[in-house]
Image 1 (cartoon, one colour):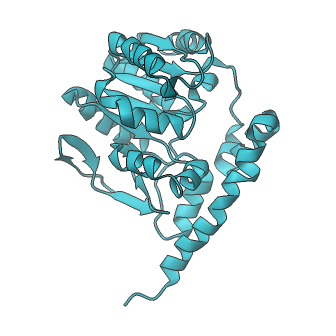
Image 2: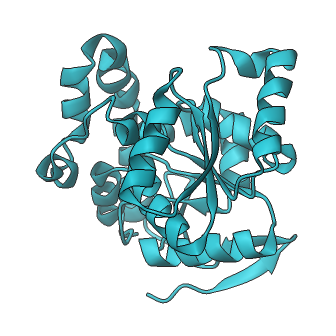
Image 3: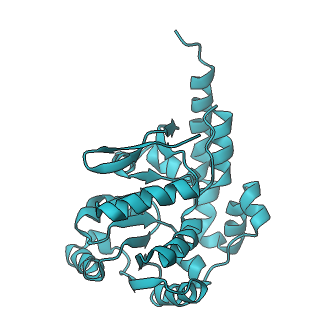
Length: 267
């Protein structure tokens, strides 16, 4: 399916947007996503990217602020094979899984070719620097504008939030990878993307940790079989058990409701 684009209120948006579970998804592949990002950087119009997964969908259902942020994002890329399968079952198939972690590597490679600068925001102290070191070795010519690890809860502290914005603005990156966890990263990007000095912000979850080698990605077969969540749970049970075993269980009624809407006779 070919994707078409047009300008709305100065923002580049995707015409073939798919709404599933009341969440907007950009039904594009990686190359098309890069084309949209390329146009955005060329126009210097600031914007941000969200990468919804099952956990995000569950939060989205009960968080008006997150729904507002998703509405304003210029790209919403599906993160996770389970959501790709779920979309197919609802009769609205999505073309390709484009997780935040995948986008760090893919966009860094494209950035090295295009001459774009990147910035890492989030993760623990030193992780951004290590991610930068590894990626510049892997993609010669990659321009790293900087990195910053703000303290926990910085977004609720006016002074720390301003300091973080000043650091990003001074670096003035083409792409800022934001790894603050959901929904903090989405809400923070939504509130601050216009004055951050970055052209494109992308919420990437644990993407900086993976790029730095601090956390190991699941084997490819688990990523494609929809069991990557189990890999992460086994490696970080104390931190993730509640998310995967309790909070994400809310996806079941959301999925059933979507299927019911599909089966309901049209009048």
